Amino acid sequence: MAADPFSDILSFMKPRTSVVGGFDFGGDWGIRFGKHSGLKCFALVSGAAWLQVDDQPEQIELSAGDCVLLPHGRGFTVSRGSAVDAMPISSLPDEGWNGGIATVNGGGDTMMLGGHFDFTGAHSDLLLGSMQVIAPLRDGDDRVGLMWTLDRMRRELVDVGPGASLVVRNLAHLVLVQALRLYLSQERDRGVGWLFAIGDERIGPAIAAIHRDPGAKWTLPHLAQIAGMSRSRFAQRFRTVCGSAPIAYLTQWRMMLACDRLLSGDETISQIAVSLGYESDAAFSTAFRRLVGMAPGAYGRKGRQAAPHLQ
Image 1 (cartoon, rainbow, N blue to C red):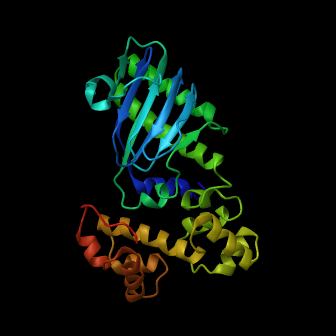
Image 2: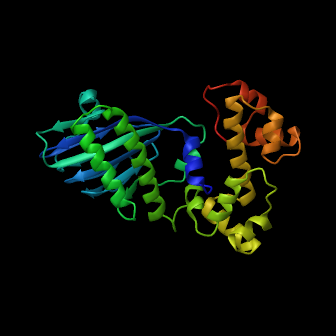
């Protein structure tokens, strides 16, 4: 299979579905969600609502089929009816909406499904940090697939069958991937960061080559040739879209791979260094310490404990 940097990076983030469920609202209503870690993703399957995110001046009107990504942890309120006092999510029994669909005010008007994803990998900021505070998703070819997945999730939550919990969690991960694809397609010409770089039609092939063989002796001219651009235009476009220089991206990706392999404990530092294109342990250790903030050996000894982010 061809190199897939999007899958590579998402896998390194190690997404974990911590909450998945929904609400069936009737009449006027309002739900208040507090600050959160990771990323929240929800969609209106039917009806309409307003979204207000903390520290954001404008409300966003949502209608059936709209999906929203909230990657920066801010609290928010979803409501129908301007005079409604939003109830905190904590006031609803957890067993009603976590792993199921809670009925509020008799239901029947608006259905909302969503998931909360925590990332146990140490590098989630490389993907989430470049995203908008609010990412409403309304366009793109993947929208039909996303709505199918949400409908399948709704059915599993309503008609609980054998293995429903596992099915719902797997569907939630599919929703996450489809939503991020939609976001990438929708913001392709406006966003800056790793997410947009890997999907860029010009520099994307060069990034795929790096991911396919991270230990190769990559140079700026070689990567520019793969992109079909002059060296100066390639370097400029790469920095504009990715937010960093091509060789800096290469080094960061090598260090992400090194972090993961050091934590597994299956290889020596020398083996990792050689496989990632470093001619000596010292050269590898210098690069690792500069980006991670500690020596490779010290990082590896931390085992499976929480690891520091790349700097």
